[in-house]
Amino acid sequence: MDMLDADQIAAVDLADWRRLGQGLHARYRVEDFSAGAQFVAAVAAAGDALGHHPRVTIGDDCVDLKLLSQDAVLRGEDGTEHRVEWVTQQDVDLARRITAIAAEQAVRAEPTSVTAIELALDTAHAAVLAPVWAVLLTGSLDARGHGTVDDEVRDVTGRVPNLWFQGTDEHETPRQRFHIDVWVAPEVAAERIAAAVAAGGTVVDDSQAPSFTVIADQDGNKACVCTSLSPAQQEPG
Image (cartoon, rainbow, N blue to C red; front, side, top):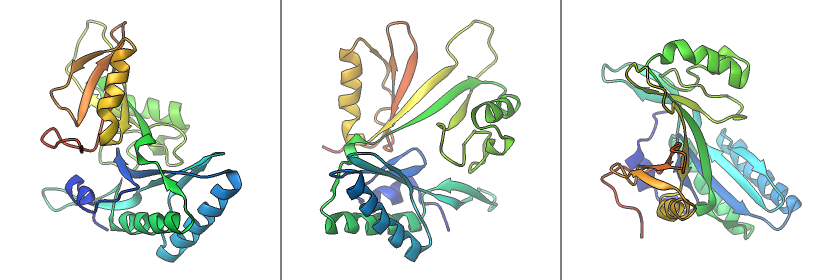
């Protein structure tokens, strides 16, 4: 099934869900663990009917869900088809069904509280470094390039954050090479950035906002606050 691009995902207007990184994320508040399990059981039945299921985490007061397809089709400029992890129509269909289940069970969505973390490493040698990080993070070389056309390291079980490689020129002067990408819902990005600044951080670069804004701590360590919006788009009011 073809992957949906950012504009197609935004156009379906899934009120309970936010795209963070490659997938759709949702958080639903529940009264207790048992209520969460009951909700997940209904979600599982809906997934069985559609032949597709979310990744689920249950807590004492919330259920976190992530939807993405393991076999989304990315078509290259030359027409070559690649299998990648990304959002497809089956994710949208199941997201809508889960939203309906939540309404039926009076389970409240809390989309602005979802956060996803990715690791980024600046390097001119991604192909060389990727195997090392694949086995360090997941114990298997299979994680290298899993669900992507790049050398990115992705754990199929979702135990650790994705690690992607940001291309850079060769350099001898030591500098920060790792940074964290903090994916948040677009409507809370400004609040998250303001809170980081209030805590002592500094905005280093907001030229690509709201897609990403670079924040530095007092020692100069950098992170990016990322959203699904492109620089040309406006955050919802």
